[in-house]
Amino acid sequence: MELRHLRYFVAVAEEGNVTRAAEKLGIGQPPLSQQILAFERELGVQLFHRTGHGVVATEAGRVLLVDAKRLLEDAQHAILNAQRAGRGETGHLNLGFTASAAFHPTVRSLIRAYRGAYPGVGLTLSEGSTAQLLAMLEEGRMDLAFLRPGRHSFAGMTLHEVAEEALKAVLPRHHPLAKRRRIPLSGLSEESFVLIPREASPMLHDEIVGACRQAGFEPLAGQQAPQLSSVVSLVAAGFGVSLVPASVSQFHAEGVAYVEIQDANARSKLALASRLADGSAKVSNFLAIARQQWGEPAAPHTTPI
Image (cartoon, rainbow, N blue to C red; front, side):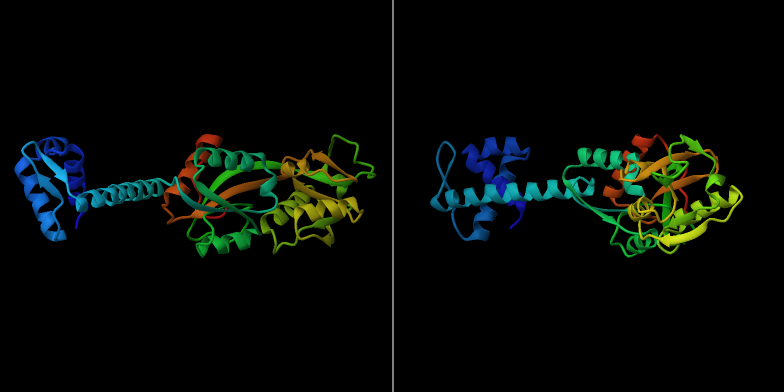
C-alpha cells in the first residue's frame, strides 16, 4: 500500500464521485477508477458501493477513511518536521563558553537573538576552559564555543573574531590606586598578582603577562585562581591585584574596585569557534545571526588569532 492510494481513496470518499475526485487530484477519471479497484483487490475488501450518481463508502470504507486521514496527516507532519530540521528550526544546539566570555555583552545579546529567532531549537550552555571546549568541539559533543583563542591547536576549526576588549585592573577597595579612574600598568609592578593558571586559560594568562612585560615589568606571581570569579574574590580578600577583561567588571563583589589601564597593549581577544567541516543548518543559522549582530566580521581564521 502506498500513500498515493490513501490519497486517492480519501478524495473519492469525500467527493462521493470518481469524476469530481479525479478533477480534484488532477488525474484522469479512468486511471483513478483503476487505482481504486486495484486498491480494493490489494486489501481484499470492497470500499465503495457504486450507484447511478457516484459512490458510497462501505462499512470497511468508512473505517478505513478515519485511519487514512490520520495516516496522511502523520505523513505530512513527518515531512514538515524533516524540512524544519533541515532548515535548523528544530533540534538541539550545544554552546560552550569560557568563564570570561560569559560576561561579554555581545555573547549574551547573540544568545538572546538566536533563541528569539529559533525558539524550536533546544539550547544547552556549558562552561569550560579553552582546552576543554576545543576537545568537546573536536569530539562532536559541542557545536560552537566562545573562547579566548591563545596558542592552542585549531586544526579543523574555524575561528570567528567576536571582540577585542581592554583589560582592567581589579584592586582591593583599600588599595592606594583604587579611587583613580585610570592608572598606568607600571603602577602595579611591585604588587603580587592573582592569576588563572596558564593551563586553564592560556590566552588570558599570556595576555596579562604580556601586557605587564610591555609595561616594563614581570608580574609577581601570587595566589592562583581556577576562574575569573575566584580571581576577583581573592583580590577582595587581599591576596593581591589582577587584570581582567573589561566586561568582567560587571561582576560586582564587595571589597574590590575596577580601574581602567592607560596602556594601549592591555587588551584581550574573544572568538567563536566551530568545526571547519560542520555544515549543519543550526550552526549556520547561529553564525548568520552573529553576522547580523556584529556586522560582517573579518574573514574566519583557521589558525590561532
